[in-house]
Image: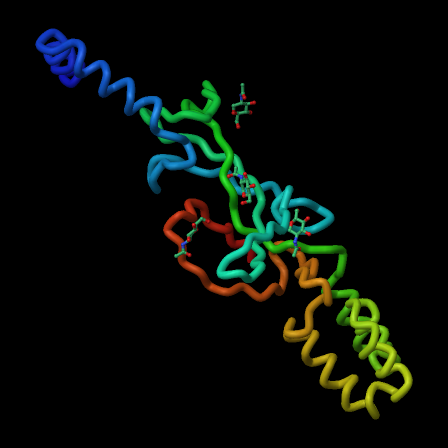
Length: 199
Ligand SMILES: *[C@@H]1O[C@H](CO)[C@@H](O)[C@H](O)[C@H]1NC(C)=O
Ligand SMILES: *[C@@H]1O[C@H](CO)[C@@H](O)[C@H](O)[C@H]1NC(C)=O
Ligand SMILES: *[C@@H]1O[C@H](CO)[C@@H](O)[C@H](O)[C@H]1NC(C)=O
Ligand SMILES: *[C@@H]1O[C@H](CO)[C@@H](O)[C@H](O)[C@H]1NC(C)=O
């Protein structure tokens, strides 16, 4: 209220300048440029079939002449009370502007961790685990050498169990969202939601 009166006074003193500045600031602030604390994000919806945030995709980009990949999924975010931004839709219930942001995810391509582990345990000597993951040459070699005299089969089983050996196409294993997946701890100040604990 006090601020409003102050603004009004300033407006009367110098109406043209101030309104110009305000106009600029309002139109310039994009929802995607909001700072931490100015918005909140809803927890991503988990896709049943991939066990990843819905809409998880792999994007490629070139950096220093190298093709790099990044996996991202859209999530819904909304502004904190009193924050106005461009590119959002006002929602009464949330009392804020709803917009989309990207969240990191793991791109999967239909290869299940549990299936791979079971194939490796029971059919590893025939190289079926390698064939399932898409390593056709080593898979066939394993088949014709009885899993490299069993040693290769054992090594592969360990590598798969440790999630060192992953699908040949570079995708991630499908693992229950709250299951035994390997997580690399990362701190990124732009993350504004926490994965809930379910154990
Ligand atoms: C990068 O993405 C584009 C478009 O999605 C695709 O056509 C291209 O093959 C991709 N490049 C690589 C190296 O995967
Ligand atoms: C506003 O948000 C609530 C909660 O997310 C949602 O249920 C509702 O459909 C939204 N309303 C509009 C008009 O988008
Ligand atoms: C998410 O990232 C992709 C790839 O960089 C981009 O095409 C897309 O527009 C982004 N979406 C949002 C909501 O920022
Ligand atoms: C944090 O995430 C944002 C958006 O995904 C990215 O632009 C930025 O480089 C990340 N920062 C770090 C320290 O990884």
